Amino acid sequence: MRADNADWLGPWEATLPRDAGQAATSYVAMIGTMRRKARLGQSMPFVLTWDDEIVGMLTVNGITWGSARWASIGYWVAQSHAGRGVTPTAVALVCDHLLTTVGLHRVEIAIRPENAASLRVVDKLGFTEIGLARSFLHIAGQWRDHRLFQVLAEDLPDGLVARLGPPPAD
Image 1 (cartoon, rainbow, N blue to C red):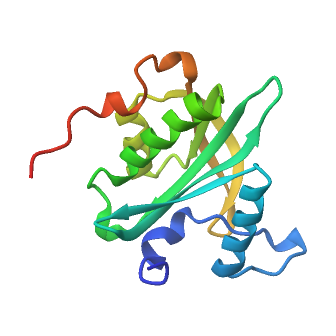
Image 2 (image 1 turned 45 degrees about the horizontal axis):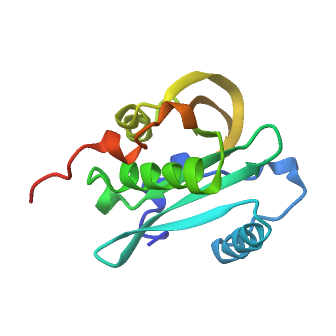
């Protein structure tokens, strides 16, 4: 699925800067790293499914406790399933879990300004834009600006899933 979606995902994929001093890692190695971080409580990787088929991924990164109690999330979905509500539903479910069950206070999403599909996700869910982070992340071979969005626990008395409304009729 990743190979089939390389052109679709390429403009949004994080890359290592040339001076990082590390060789590029395989997708399999990246999954191993995610699993280790999850066992340490630093990350939560989730797969996105549609009719029992994996169609994407959502990862909670940088889980921070103490006085901050926040994390960031990143996600991708296969082109074949874009626009079906998979990503907003997954983001809403995971944010509700993080802000209630887990006990975090804030969840952040960073999005490249030209990523219209991801901007629709935060708009649909009512995330608050908090600013522009210049040269925020190395993506597709260059340092890229990102718009930052957040949702706070007190913003969601009824949860984020409630903002989605009823599912569309078939």
